[in-house]
Length: 440
Image (cartoon, one colour):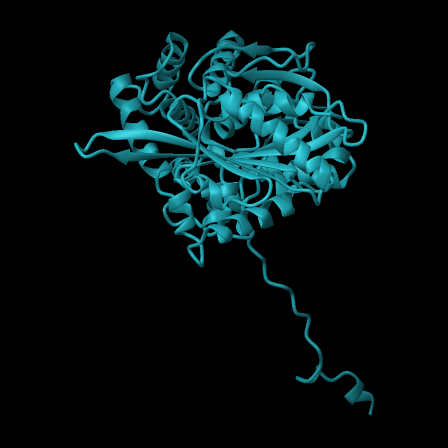
């Protein structure tokens, strides 16, 4: 008996089973290179500090909610610069680029996917921090973090208003937000990344010892400028000079600037057009921008306004629906705006038509929908719809005409066409926001 008590454990005794490592959702390959390594480590440190209650150390560098290549490149560039330029000072900064879109929405912009792959980032975008990965809602987190830096938009979304605005870089209209921000740079250039890269290079070259600038980030910067300037064909002098400075530091330093930028523009533009496979919901959300708008009405002091930009006519979009009918497009749109809690949604469509001589003509459409089940009742929806409709129809820069199937539309729905090529969201949004802000 005594000897039996010291016998070796039997085979039927429980064994310790250790769980296998789980890879990040969607990740297939870990990125290679310094930039991917920094971005992944940066995200890890941010989440660790949040767990420890140390979010107050961190600065969010955030682009607009459409999440285009310009916003993404600008945010990543400035976050990298803030951390590295202050690393050896008495006041090192911790900054992270926040992409204000969901992780899966990044692939709705194929040019982003291509640019990130060329920059050797991890697949599945696991190197990047996206809105759906935030461990707290923005309203709460905005009161905890050190502050925000705005790139490629002039004012924070309502949910980030609790955070101090530390800096602003934008190439749109100055809305007066963050008057004490520094730097606070507004300029008419093709790409916001131009403004960020210019300031980054100026500060980098003023350091007693420059930090390492990874070629992957430099190439991402050039790609963003190339897309927005159409290969420098529509560049300002400032865009061109910054692109030249960046190129000289990149692995493409021996190449001709215009040749390289036109090549980047071609391949990224080709990727950008690869959206035929997207369904209506994805087309609505791939370039969605929305926020709360204040009104003078005491009954409804704020309404939610959202805009999508879609590179297909409404007729073509209808053919993408399950039933290929008008009602189905509006049903899908209603499901999306119900999810986002939007009171007024505007789809801005653009497409080209060839005439009998083969010449292309560009057309735009404005689709207006108001719903009464979020913040406003039916009487308010009727009044708000009429207010916005009149503002659109009265604007002489748009010169809209009713869509050919306008007579089939439902209540609080309207579609117009126009031929002003320049009248995209930057033109239409202020017209509608002004009308909403005056609505009572």
